[in-house]
Length: 311
Image (cartoon, rainbow, N blue to C red; front, side):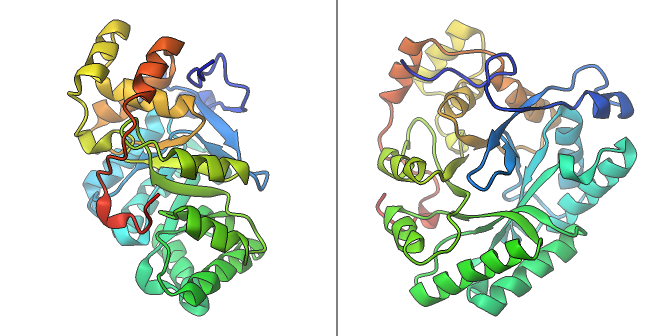
């Protein structure tokens, strides 16, 4: 039977309650949602839905979007050094924590090592720079943004992440844009198994072989571009299913991804869309509709420049 959507009623995973924050916040005091949390292979938990901030500017617009997301119930913010907006994210997060009295540990924050900073010392310095920009003592997750072509540097970068984890600079460590060969090579040389692999996954790019390999090793898939950058919102199959459930095409795409157990990273700077994306997980697709969507899965990448493997 096809998996059903992760919802507050059906998920076996721990739920992150945000009612306290809702009472303390002046806005969204009665409409804050609950977000499912998934256990990682290192014992830490990750909120299943994150606000992605790729291409978001390093200013007020992004601060407002992060604040709107936190007010709505998001507890996971996904940034990167390459996005050049860690300062804006950090300002919004710190201000929101102070305003609501929410403990820092209730917010999950991710950043990533950019390609130019591979190598042991360079990686560690890049992580410290990201921490300074966020204005935080630790990150919840730090990823290698993409695999260095230099295998030695790739391994050195991972060793630096393992050291940072031991030192408490980051709670969980993982990778992004790693194909099957990159994963297998890393596992043959690593002490710590990556907690996640952040890759493009949506109904039109399902990465089945890679997903199967990651699942085998307990590596959680984080699905970026889950809306295929908007390129498939008018797909007739998705549109028909959306009409059936009285939902938007975006909500169908996000629900499908979460139902597979993936962490989902939709991005938006618009408060209404931020809220709509979060409202994608309070219903279940029927098994026959899941199968129809599964049948769309050709390898249709929308982020081709980031893919350094054929899988």
